[in-house]
Every structure is written in C-alpha cells, then in structure tokens.
Length: 145
Length: 152
Image 1 (cartoon, chains in turn brown, orange):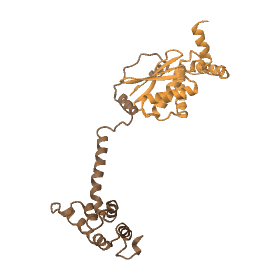
Image 2 (image 1 turned 60 degrees about the vertical axis):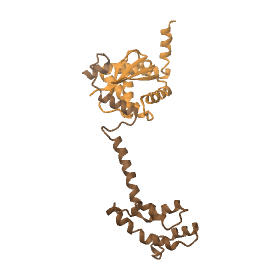
Image 3 (image 1 turned 30 degrees about the vertical axis):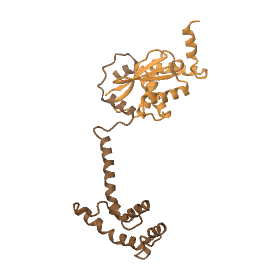
Image 4 (image 1 turned 90 degrees about the horizontal axis):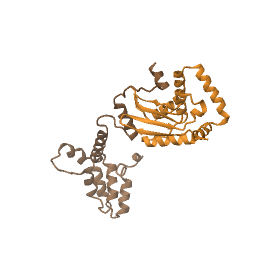
C-alpha cells in the first residue's frame, strides 16, 4: 500500500503524523532518524551475536524511549512493534514456550480423559474382565451359544 | 381388589389401547416364529436403531447422562432409569417400561430393546471399545437391570 510513496516518508507517514498530533514540537526528524537507521543496526547486530556486550538489552523498550515523547508510551510501543520486526521475536518466544509447556503437561502419559464420563469409561476399560455371570437371561444364553 | 390388581391395571394402561392388541399379537407371532435368542438380538437391534433416532444431548458425567435419559423416557412415558457407578461396572436399572404391557409378561426377550437403547446411548457418549451394555437381570416386569462393563 505504501510502496507508491516517497522513500523518506513511505512507511512512517501515519506515525509521524501521530507524533505531531501528540507533541507538536516538530520531532519528526529525530523520529525518522531513529526508524531509518537504528531499526536495522541494533537488532541484526549485537542482540544475537554478543549477548555479553550489553548494548540494548531490551530492543522494544529501547526503540521508542530515546527520541520520541515519553508522555505517549501506549502509542510508541505498537508503533515500534510494527516497524521493528525482529524486536517482536524476543517477547514472542517465551510466550510460545509457555504454551508448549502447558500442552506437554496435559499430554503427559496416556491421552488425558476430558470429562468425568470419559474417565469413567477409561477406568472401566482398564478394569479386569468380570467373572462369568450365572444369570439365565435369554441374551446371555444367546451369547453363550 | 388387591394392590397387585391395581398395579396390573396401571401396567396394562401403560400401552395405548389402540396398539395393545396389535402388539400382543405381534409379540406372540414373534415367539412362534423365532428362537428366543434371535428375538433378543432383534430387539437389541431395534433398540440401537431407536437410540440413533432419539439421541441424547451431550453429557459430561454419568449423572448428566442419566438425567438426559430420564428426560427422554419421561417425554415418551417409558418409565425411568437409575445409573449406579461401581468400581468395575455401571448398573443400569430401568423401571416401569411399557414393554410387558405391550408385548406380554412372558416376553422377557423384549428387554433386549432397552439393552440396545442403552448400548447406543453409551456408545454415542464415548463408551470405550471393549465395553458393552448387557442385560444382567430380567428381574420383574417392572424392573430390568443391565450392566455396563468390560466384555473383551
């Protein structure tokens, strides 16, 4: 959609406008400077290769905090999330891991019975075969034949 | 007049007069034409067909399934049932069905119908393979007991 616009404002027109509305001091230059340059460098470089070098420890938090208005945190966070794709990978990984952990807990051992009726059926199926009944009903006589 | 007479009166009226004579004649003809075991199997198949045609709503527990079955039986005026959970089986006691009124007191094979019904309902409820519902005690004309347990 935004590919037809000029490269300098292509992906950030709405965000820049948003910052202008929130804080009309003309910080667009600083914001653009952050988004064009820093978006690529901190994420691809040190965060994966040099964990001990201690550059930006929290990619998402570092992005909006530096240049833009601090009084608009709710706006800045999703804006950075839209632009900085790798930054989203960091918080997404633990969430997925926790989901997997929950599934593993449920799937431990036998396939888990879901309702009390399912558990009853499973318990009866695991029970030993009952001893032969000595009733003289027509159905039992039929099955014996 | 004795209490059993009163009961017999009510039992006989559990089946509409419109159908009573017809069903009695049908049952007697069945008994002459087929061995008892075949009749029992035939009735069980009819019962399973009935269960398919009259499915119960989903139930998460044995009590809920019992309630659904009793709602169905009450709607049809077919008596009532009680499920009793035991360690290795479930007893199914059905009381006051109109089978004896419709097919005659001697038609013990008619209980196969209820066996088929409960088999169908429990299967639909997720009864595990290797389990089945079978008649345990024909009891009296007013009460029949079935058992759900492991059969293989």
